Length: 478
Image (tube, rainbow, N blue to C red):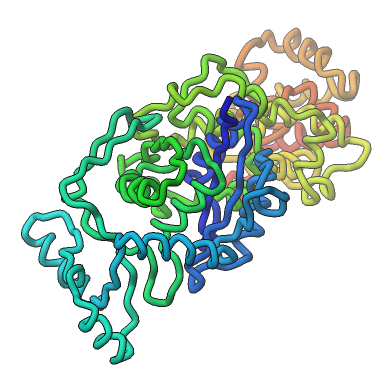
């Protein structure tokens, strides 16, 4: 039985974003579901743009999501090295094999010439492709150009009128004609391997069995298959994920907001929220519950991946964030809230605070607001809040203060006293109390609020509400 071997092969030129994170996550799920191997490989042949800081942040992001690789970067394997910049000798070997088969030729066309050619083709409504200007250069013409110090690229000689077919794991049968492709570069003028070449060679030599990647790579697949077939190398199955779009239907990009994993983590998103959202971003799961990595892997099926574009819905991500916060125990939630909250909440109130605010927060900054309301800040009231307090009337808050004097923080008895004295119930009873105690129309249970405030602060807030209701406190100063 063939072992499933998937991979994630990012270029370290920037932070890991939602799109690439989904490709990595699905690849890891695929391997886990089949009890296979997930490989992490770094494609750093673009030395000018590659930066090791992005390799460090990439590993941190993947580990934070709970994605671990069984082979690759930092993990011993039989098919390394796992940095493409360290595989130059391997690529040289396979270049030489292609040269021997007369499947390559040097190309001396400049970037300016190629750009002008592409511009002309586009202006005529044609798909850009190399015309083969250098394809038939004689040995003497090649020597003349080399003698002038020109540095050629190396192009793969695409066979004429050949159909390249494969079954895409997601999109189904695919067919390309070599006549539409044109000879493509496999080695840059500086001697480094192009993505097209080294990506194909590495997948073959690392025995990758399935590749899940974005559909922007679909046009690369026939080129890479031609390389592997020409060299007699093992070919993986390819699956191309449909793009992720923003609200305007265009591919998700920076203009839609910053959706790097690093930024999401800084904002307070929990990894379980991200993985549950990613798992359903173009893939179907029957369960609507928060699932662990293992559970997501168990029910992962490449046949359930949609061929249509996946719409990035921030509200859905927030839904999973709320569920992930709800799943935290008290200790984990307190740690997640961070030092800003931990300094504001009295130690003896820690457990009660966590229990009270947990259903009302999505991010640590939400808890900052409640810590300020409950322990520090003088409340600020909106015009609507003031109207509610004044409609309740002075006597409402006289009764409230007296009830606190009698019952302390026993909120059930406080409510009963006000209810009996003023014959109130429902919104007319609860809303003035909530506004007076928190300055908010929603939030933690009032019994929990009372317990956190304590009798003295409750009396102070009811007294202030009395002055507002009576008009003795100027609304303009609130």
